[in-house]
Image (cartoon, rainbow, N blue to C red; front, side, top):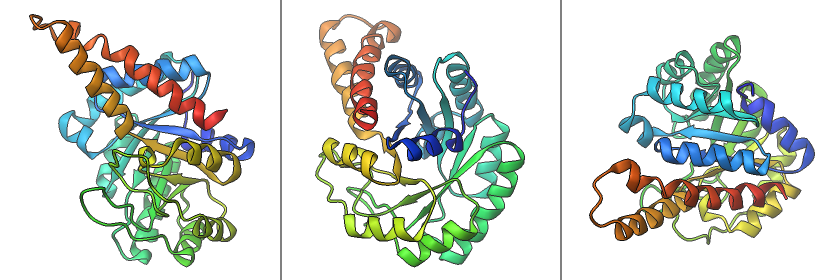
Length: 275
């Protein structure tokens, strides 16, 4: 299958009222499980390498790994860099084969965020790569607090950035271990009325599954970033593997049972956004 961009998968999702899962990759096992789950459901996915992943594994290695999986998949797979904070990071990602980049200028003044995103879009477009940006600030469960997305700033970004998708902050929070986020539906509707781009919610694991399903069907939110709940599935499966094989020291043997466990949970996530 041809490696996809956000434009390829999100425009169709927006038109047909479903959403695509942006799946947070930390290593080979979860990337493989995510791709297998996509093939099982017949739905596109977005494999995402965030800052933590990139700190652990070099970007050229991640690019080759993700492209290898995408090229062999029977469904569209986007190879995406998440939360890049500079033009240089985005440029390196494009050079290493990623088909999509997210420039996070959410903590910059809005004019600077729009201007930098526009510069990145110019370079990315020439390479056939898509760009996601962020307006407002999506906080962290045990870190910086969120700043709600301004409707006026979202409209400015929509008009002038050239981005293919816009991440917004409307009650969603990164790294939530319980699905109890309260989405501000009124702010979402106001943003939708003022913009045209596909919308993205980071911190998708903190949003109840029923809410994700409702938003996928009834709003322009067509990408949910999902990480924490799948990392929880990884941890549970790995602890069970260690308990089942207390004398094993072979990492491949110990990690092998983790792959089907993550795949099962990922199938649930993908199906919940596309049913």
